[in-house]
Image (cartoon, rainbow, N blue to C red; front, side):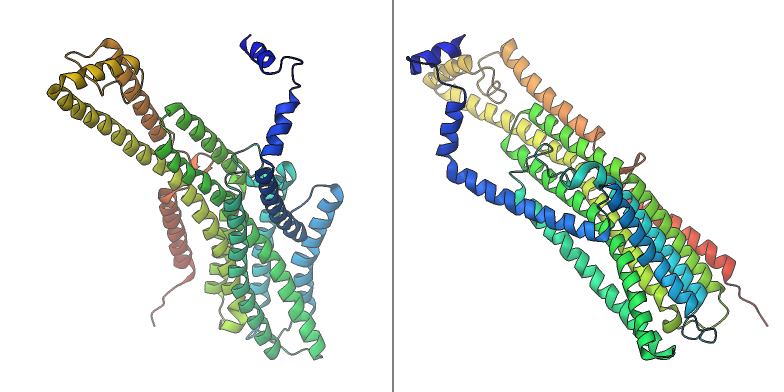
Length: 449
């Protein structure tokens, strides 16, 4: 009932409308609002560029027409075009420069990995939209505070895509040019057309594969921004409930990311593993001579597949380790707060014994501010009161409970319960090594004369 009386005292004739103060405040901070609108426009333009690029690759499937057009273009450019060119214009006497079995295996693994990437990410983009997909909308975090960091990370992801795509494209083009020089056709125009068909198909499928991995990398890096800010939050705040609420929000975002990308990560790992072992079987089981010309596509396709899965695993392990490191950071904060409050208490007690007037002022301050977390034990008389001891112990136990909560709820990117961290990477490495030795033991035989 106090608010109506205050309003009538400020404006006796008529009570103001609720919108009047808001209009005044908007007019007062108009330059700041205009700057925020400019930054919003920059972020919107960056997101529109990302969405246009994804639409060009076929990831945007918001309608039935775009869905059909996307998959039709993928089947035609990524699958039918290279297969038809390879089958129709195959050279039967050119095993030294082109092996049809190798080429079909490479095309199959390349198409499967691109199809997995296109299927998983287009589903998430269609369901959530670009803003919710990247967690940069106005309802899932402090978008205003991190706007510049968002733009920087998005541009960095595009540079990473270009950095890895161009060298692989250069290798593929050089290999196709060398093969064109050795495998002769009826005319040079036909040879150039075959070269362009192979390069176009490979570029389209490989860009889809790398883009999917880099999008996951971008989503994780955008969350790293929030984890770094959480570390700074421990330096400027002291309320445990604030820390708990922020950590619950971060953990919720990690669980959403894990849920959206777990199928993609699992299928990507399985497809890459299967394609590498099929490649190993083909290479070790081939009785002829393998050169850079007839087996060079194996190297190029392997580079793209391995780079894609390394980008994904690096992003997942990075965000998982950032989440796990919060427990040690909070433990250090808890120790510093506890030790600083004890040291300040001892120092003030020694000063109080030397001066009776200072002791009287300390007692008065103690009576006025006994509910504070840090001051509850700073001013001590002969015996601490129950309220003083209870306040200090309550603050200590809240901090201790928060540290234990972080130790048991570290979080991170998970794949059906398995946290993607260094331990999982070591497990994957030894599984791959065991499978490689098994394949080599079945295919390579040493005979004695």
